[in-house]
Length: 103
Image (cartoon, rainbow, N blue to C red):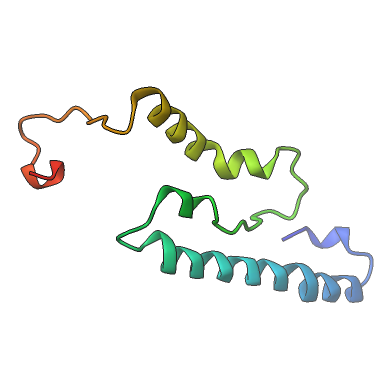
């Protein structure tokens, strides 16, 4: 939360609590609901991760694009699959249990 010296009156602080903190909580609960219902699903697809809700973690304005941060790792995975193909199998050691590789 922002430092107290940024608020000239107590009413300004009350408005912040009513608006900003309330919206943070709504966004956080929306994200947790999405994570519980979609991301933890056993049959989740890659496209489901692109529909994740976004929530702010700081009161300051950030200059970076939230879309780049939100999708950064997913785009790297997407590019890797496009480059290597869908049938890519990761290297596994002989000590890896067979059930992990689907055998």
